[in-house]
Length: 246
Image 1 (cartoon, rainbow, N blue to C red):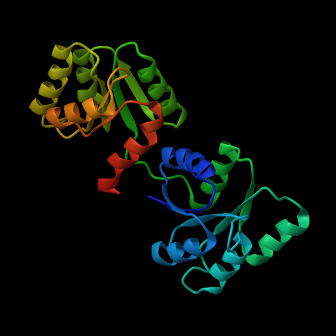
Image 2 (cartoon, rainbow, N blue to C red; image 1 turned 60 degrees about the vertical axis):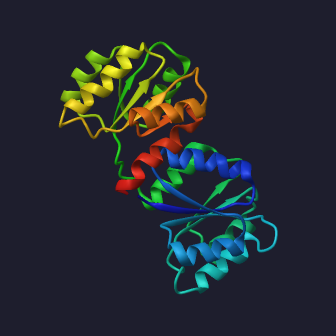
């Protein structure tokens, strides 16, 4: 999994970039200032650095110069993130060693295209996803986000038909709505355990009506790989599933 170091002091911007890049399959490491960015770059040796140019203390341009002077980090490509776009400033950034720049405020599509152009698209450990859910806004939002991100998503309202499909397609992960009738939820876990081909498929519980604490307990009892109560948690749960094999 390609590792990207983001050097950014604005927590709002960090969350925005993290959301889009991790959802696309990249491993993101964050530094809050230029000095910390240099230290992490030396230790982690990321495939790419996204460098904010205006930060307190050591600004981005100075950090880039120091990174390019260091034999341990000189070959790491750097994209400048900046609100400044004057030709003189951009030229100075290129002279310091950047390979490209993305202007603030970010267009997520342009940012992702810039990253892909330099480090390539991440090799996904998860491609096929099966959703077993009733009619809920949460299930619909999860499906829409996954489809937009390029995953192959199959959705079923009933467990029997879904598992019959799963035997043929071998999904990488199953999202199961625990708001379905108990007998259907239990049957999914029972049938998975009976199948040597499907017993190791991770199951993620989802519910629009239960809190995190309740879902966490249910996931532990049923032997699920995790839970999700909000579509905003999607990138995080997929990253956690990938981690053991990464």
